[in-house]
Image (cartoon, rainbow, N blue to C red; front, side):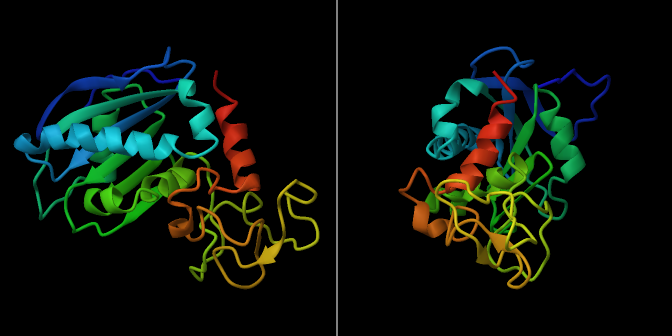
Amino acid sequence: SGWSPPLTVTIIGNTSSCTDVELSGSPSQKIDVTFIPNYYSESDLTQFSEDVQTTISDILYYHPFSSKTDLFNFHRVDVVNLRDSDPLGENEARAYASLCPTDQMIVIYNNWNFPGGLGMDGAAVVNRQINNQWPVLTPHEFGHSFGNLNDEGNLNRVPIWPERNCSSSKNNPPWKGYPGTITIEGCRIDKGWFRSSLNSMMNDPDEFITDPNGFKPWNIKLLTDKLNQYR
C-alpha cells in the first residue's frame, strides 16, 4: 500500500476505528480496499457489513481478480451519516478511509440520491440497491478506479486514460497482435478512438453478469499488469 496513518483526521459524525474484513498479508505488499458507508443509520450497519461482503464477492468473481485473491486486504469503517442535504463528500470519505490502510476506497450509498456508480483515482462510488440487483456495477467501477480503464461505450467524451483500453490509432493500438483482440471503432466516443473487443465489462456489463472473463483479453492483461505490482 505504501500507506502511513495521517497525523490528524477530522471526522464528522459517528465512527468506529478500522475493521478488518479479509486479510491476506501486510499492507506494504497488498492492495488494501476500504469500504465507507453513506446514508446508513446506526441500525443499518449490520446491513452495511453484509453489503461489503456481497461487493467483495462481486469483484473477486471476475478474472483476473478471481485468480489473485491473495493480493487483497479488505477493510471497512462503520460511520453513521444520514445528512440528505449534505452527503458524504470525497474529502470526508477519504478522511474516513485513512483510518485504514487504503489503496482503493469504495463508498456504498444506501440512498437513491446517487442513482448509479462512478470510479476514478482510487475511489469508486456505488448505489447499494442497484449493486445488489446488478452485480457487475462494482467490478465495472473498480475497473476504472483500480485499472484506469475507460468506459468503452459512447459517452461523447474523449478517453480519460488514452492508449490503455482506448486508442487513437486504428493500425497500431497497444493491443496489436495480442491474442483474442480486435480493433473496432468507438471507445468512450464513437469516432476516432478504438477498442479491443466488440463488447466487454467496460462497455455493456449486462452481457457479463455470469461471465467471469467479461473484462476481455486486453483489459484482463492491463488489470493483471497492475496486480503484478503487488505480491
